[in-house]
Amino acid sequence: MSAETDTSGTMNLTHHFLIAMPGMQDEMFGRSVVYVCEHSEKGALGIIINKPSDITMGKLFDKVDLPLRREDLELEPVFQGGPVHTERGFVLHDRIVIESGAVDESAYSATLTIPGGLEMTTSRDVLEALSTGAGPHRVLVSLGYSTWGEGQLESEITENAWLTVHADAGVIFDTPVAERYDTALALLGVQPWALSAAAGRA
Image 1 (cartoon, rainbow, N blue to C red):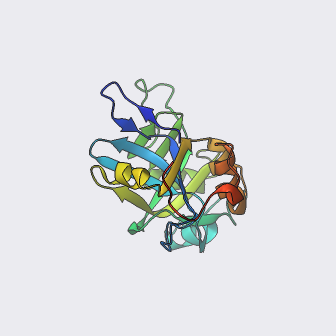
Image 2 (cartoon, rainbow, N blue to C red; image 1 turned 90 degrees about the horizontal axis):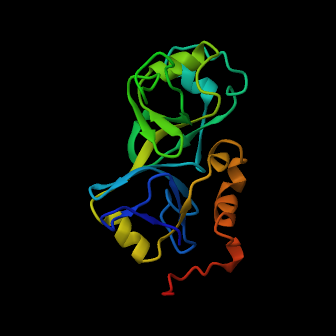
């Protein structure tokens, strides 16, 4: 298990992957890879990156009355990011900084800057940028997100529900969806067949 601790000794899994152990039977989280956008003593927030919905980016843009002038994104799936706020869009993307702006000022109005070089934007302006053919080069759009309350994620990790590893943006943006679970495991040097479905104690 790879986890970072901050100066207070608290576990910090921001910019990490959570990889579901085989014993997880939950329909949403079974065989899932979750990218953790934010983690503190108050809880955690993440996006599932390997559960595509039946909605394409093209259909999503039709629904929000925007054209999509990015042929590379037209047929890309919109993901099921988690069970919370499934009616809202969350856009994971490469960092875009306004050159003339303040230090670390994002190009979009509602953006969480994630240490490690990624951002998560919830405001419509990122979709408007994509609709013009501009916007971030690499994006993953989800409906909904995943959240854990204070101490909940730490407890689940102790119970062997999740493996954790430092995130690799290439898995999010460049790896075929069907290969993301195995590729995330490979970051730990683990093969899927080597995992027991039982949550044993090491």
